[in-house]
Amino acid sequence: MNMKKILVLLVLLVAPAFAAASTAKVVLEKAPVNLHDKSSLQRGAQIFVNHCLNCHSAASMRYLRLTDIGLTEAQIRDNLLFSAEKVGEPMATILDPKDAKAFFGVVPPDLSLIARSRSPDWLYTYLKSFYKDPSAKTGWNNSVFPNVAMPHVLWEYQGDQRLSVTQRVDPLTGDKVETRRLVMDRPGSLSAVQYDQYLGDLVTFLSYMSEPSQAWRRQWGIIVLFFLAGFFVLALLLKKEFWKDVR
Image (cartoon, rainbow, N blue to C red; front, side):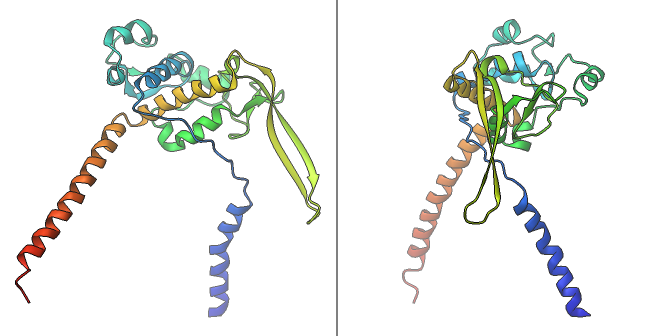
């Protein structure tokens, strides 16, 4: 009986590993995020306000924090303050949750911490992976997030993609192998390189917004590590000096 219990326990422990292995894993592209590039952060803030803030909110972020990326209060007030009256207000959307529920079937999530919950690489790949799908309510689908309720709001810049699915038989195993890839049917107003940079600026700002002090924190972390390394060398030399006459 004890042996049976042990076998059952082993099966329960190993089963999740097989389940995870059988799930198709999405290969994420590396997001070109540079939190020290204030020009990229400023462009990303403009993209976020113009395209994302229409439906999504960022309640944990205030417009005033944009002064940390090099913008003045006058620039914020004149160019970015569309859904608020004062620079000190949070970045909230004007879309009513009830209307959002009716339009998309779900209320768009707050994006304050999306880069921390999903990762910049996931966001970057996700925003590049929309394709036309007539069966979807919005007419769009996504290969990274299947059946997502969000439409492709940047389609004018990227263009129209379609999902191409091909199947072949593996000559060694005889198994059917399915290949899925996105094909561009109609180019957008930006080239592929320009669109990648456009998304890079947006994801850079989303990464900054998820933790505005992270660049400062990392910089001081490096300084502290160098200090500790120097202090270790000093402590080692002092220890040798104090114990040199002890046998």
